[in-house]
Amino acid sequence: MKYWYLLFVGLFISANAWAKMEYKVTVPVDVEAENSVVAKDKAMLQAQREAFLQIAGQLTSEENVQKLGELSDDAILHFVEAVSVADEKAGGTKYIANLTVQINEQLLKDYMAENEMIETEGAEMVVIPVFKPSAETYPVLWEDNNVWLKSWRSKGLIKFGTMQMRTLTDNYRQINDFSAQNALYMGADLYADISQRSGSDKVYVVFADTMSNGDLKVTIKNEKTKTEDSFTIYNDGQGDIFDKAIEKSVMFISNMERTIKNADQTVSVNSLNAVYGYQNMKDWLVKSKAIADLEQVEGIETKSFGGGKVNFSVRYTGDIDDLWSALQEIGFSHEASGNYFIIR
Image 1 (cartoon, helix red, strand yellow):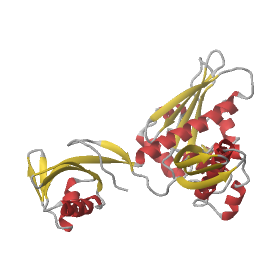
Image 2 (cartoon, helix red, strand yellow):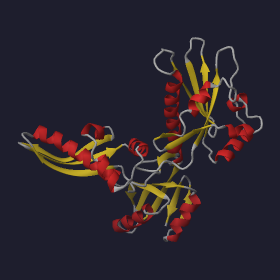
Image 3 (cartoon, one colour):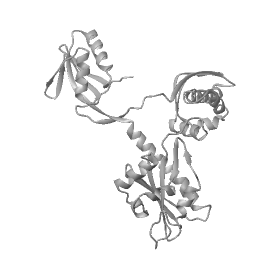
C-alpha cells in the first residue's frame, strides 16, 4: 500500500523492500467463558495459534502444519512477535475483537528448517578453523595439533535454521600458500580460490585463540564482507570448551548472515518537491493516484493547496530519469524550477 507523509528535498534513507508475504494475520475472535477476562485470555491463545498455523501453511505442507498444530500454546507464543487489538468488546462472559498477530519470520523459518519442514539455503558456508594452542605458539591450520579444526570436523555438516556450514576439508590443502597466517589475513586471490573450489562465496575464518588462563577467545571473520565479531568462552571446567565455542560460533555466523541479508533487502529512496496546476479537486485526486501507482514511486505527500496549484513531494526509488520516463508514459511532462519541479 502506498502512503503519504512529509519528506524534504534530497532526503536519502533506507526502506525495507522485502514484500513477498505477510507474517501477520488478523483473526476475528468471539469467545465466551466464565467471565470476560478468562474469555480474553482464551481468545488470545486461539488467535495466536490460528495465525501461526495460517502463516506456516504458506511455507510448508499440510502434513507439516498438522505437526506444528501439536505444539503447546506456550511453544507457539515463542514465535509471536506482537499482537494488536481492534474493535474490542468485553463484558459479562464474552470477549469480541479483531486480533492482529505478528509472527517472527526468522524464528519460524529457522524452526521449520531444523525440523526439515522447509528446504535450507542451497549454498553451503565454508568454515576455516584456525587455532592458537597457547600464548607462546603460532596459529596453526593444517598441523596435527589443530584440535579446533578436528572438533569442527567431528560435527559434520552443521545445519542451523536455513543455513548449512561445512568445515574445511583436506582437499583445500592443494591451494597454494593456504596457511594459518594467510587464512587470518586473507587476500583476494586466496578467497577467490576457496570460493571457486567450494562453489560458495560464504567463507568464514573462525580463529580460536587460547588465553594464558585457559579461556578461548574466538574471532569470526566473513571474508566476503571483511566484517568480524568475537566472543570468549571461559575455562570453567564445565563441559567441552570447544563444543561450547562451536555452538556459539554457529550462532554468531547466523547473526552475521542475517545482517547481510537485511542489508541486501533495502533500497535507496529519494524525494523531490513538485507543483501541479489542477482544474479541480477531482482532477488532482485522479492524477495523484496515477503518480502514486507508478512502480518507481514509494509514496507522495500533499503539502499545500492554493491558487489552483498543489505543492507535493514524491518519494521514489532508482534513477530520477526512470521516474521522468514513467511519468511521460502516463501523460505527464516536467520542468525544473529552482529547488522544485513543475508537473503538467
